Length: 275
Ligand SMILES: [Mg+2]
Image (cartoon, rainbow, N blue to C red; front, side):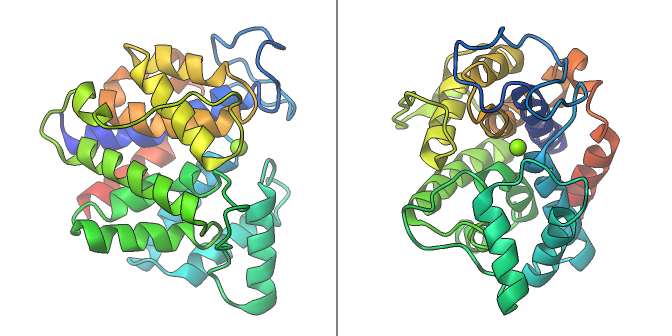
């Protein structure tokens, strides 16, 4: 599969997982009719296919990288700030909101807290652009940029470990000529957490579990979002992984056609890959 088809799959997969999951976000598992389609609703009364902060922050990160032609921490945080203070902003995590306030107060864009109590999934959900941006660098230089983008808002040792694992997996998929699921999952200890919480390790495990226990993008994404709770971010992280693996042509059209940002995302991905 061509790298561009995997990259389109990963970014559009993120959006699909986000929009599907947002329909049942915050709801404990078993308290809602199972998600089977893009129907909207949920606590934010969304339109079918409406994306949330997970996809929006990924789009903003991509725009910043392409506009600056490099990673500019100030520029990216300025875009986050502009969005966070706009009427369109909803579902923003408290860690991210606090980091943005602290940036405006201090001028220092690196506001992630190096403390295990701050190990939310708010930077993992938007890691995909940084992976695409750094594909042509060696592992060390690439991850250094990926981590810098995380620590704008999230800098705990657990977030570091999870980000590094996800970075390795996504790079392996994107850079391989062909790869089997077994090779990706080899050596990973996947533990389905008791809840699909906002804790970064839980989200990562839910995404891996959905990927390991399904035969298609669609089967996995529905399994993941139907765990409820932080379903949009779990869906977004699963979507990056499974979308990259199965490719853009494997994304169900009945989900994709509702994503209003589809063309914008595709354009951004093409610019990232062809630069
Ligand atoms: Mg969200």
